[in-house]
Amino acid sequence: MARPGRTMGRPMAEDPHAARWAHLREITPVTRRFTYLNAGWSGPLSLPVVEAMKRRIDLEATYGPVAKVANEDKTAIVARLREASARMLGADADEIAITGNTTEGVNIAVNGVALKPGDRVVTTSVEHSSGMVPAYWTRRKYGTEVAIVPIAVDDGPGAILERFDEALSPAASLVILSGISYSTGGLLPLAEITRLAHARGATVVVDGAQTAGHLPIDAHALGIDAYAVPSHKWLCGPDGLGMLYVRRDRIADLDPVKVSGHAAASWDFAGHFEAEREKVTKFELTTTSTPLMAGTLAAVEQYLASGPAAVWDRVRALSRYAEARFAPLRGVRVSGAAGEATRSGLFLFAVEGVDPAHLVDYLQGDGGVIARSVREMGSVRLSLHVYNTEGEVDRVAELVERAVAQGVPERYRGQARAVEA
Ligand SMILES: Cc1ncc(COP(=O)(O)O)c(C=O)c1O
Image 1 (cartoon, protein in one colour):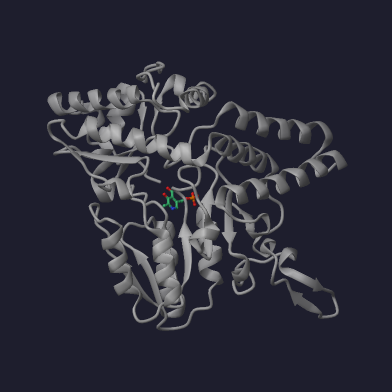
Image 2 (cartoon, protein in one colour):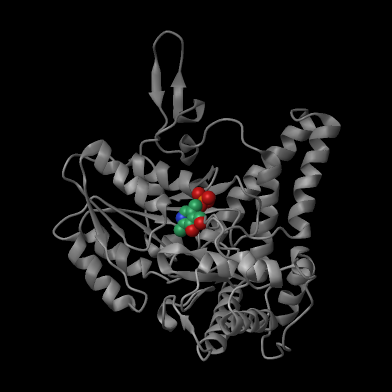
């Protein structure tokens, strides 16, 4: 059984934001019950996010979902969500489409590019299925040539760029890649890759599932064409919502794959139709969940109030701490992206001879630690967020040491593999 969580950790006196992180821990109820280390899959809701969703649900229940008061509230939520998301992504509000999740955003952008047989689509060996399957789908649908840039855990930005340079030659149409790899935890040099890709004529679509709420993003400075993010991972918003940034001058070129009235500039029943070209809302469909938008807005505002740079510093400090703590352990290998240039809040380790899915079950069952295994890496992945503490990292390390010394208890072995998302 899970043990109740404790407020653990060493004093963080040297961190000027320590009080903010303690506050976020306090208002994130799951931290009282579990050592929650899985924001890379789905982050925990804080009380303000829950309250924002409840407030909207109560409003709908009290007045009905489309009374004037509810409609005005919805309009305000949508506008504020676009503005807050734009601030988070380094973009303008009229470059932000509201989607259902990252994968939908990636699909909108990838399928919006006009491709033909033989066009080169470049991706990497550290992508999630949400990047790989859309890439392969272009091959299936148009006969594109899919090039996969191999990325190893110990590759630094220089090596990654060299391989991209090779894969992009002599010309490419599309690049699909993650900002932070879900499998290695490594940061990819997006600005430089985008420069190389644009020089070869390619559209760059970023799978930002592991980035929003994790590291500062400046889409305008990066020059990226499209950048898709979710609400439910590092932002700790509800699931079922996401945002897609499309660079203003690319909106007209990208053709929406699913269309609604938002994709029409004008139409009538006499056969007249004119497509909307310039508005990012052409990528949006009809009714979406306002409670989810309200929750996402609260999550984005909470993140912005923390300060993206401060969050990034803190999660990487925790990752550094985890590396120092795990590296000396007998039978344990630090197995994720290595080095400061690629470090993120995702920390991976492997235990010799132990199935990571069994280890994950053991950590949860015996220690109240929620983590995930990454099959491709034979590893356990810890998502270290600002509500986590060094003490929690110590606790996981102690549990792992125990598993190395005594083995993972029989009850956690031989089960079906844990689901991975
Ligand atoms: C890199 C990456 N892309 C896409 C996804 C899927 O995200 P979503 O559920 O927002 O579509 C995940 C989920 O783990 C991921 O890690």
